[in-house]
Length: 62
Image 1 (tube, rainbow, N blue to C red):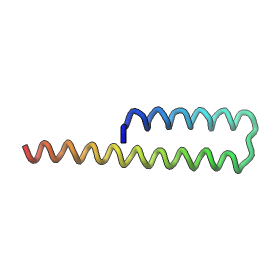
Image 2 (cartoon, one colour):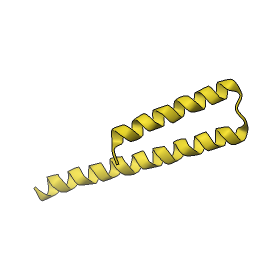
Image 3 (cartoon, rainbow, N blue to C red):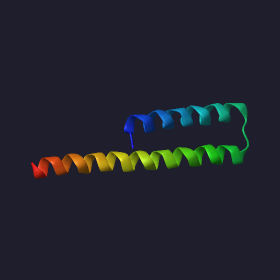
Image 4 (cartoon, helix red, strand yellow):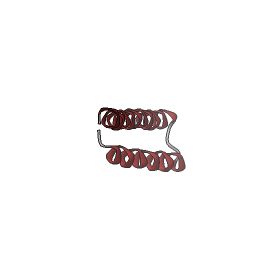
């Protein structure tokens, strides 16, 4: 997973959430946007963790 792509996607979802809030979206729509945002954040954590473990492996092995 590309960290930069995930970060860009999360920023776009956050902007969507702010816009939806300002336009008076229903609670279901807000929940779906928030859920997508949380999934993206989880994927970002996994990507950062795997990148760190990769770097640690290089340092330890090397």
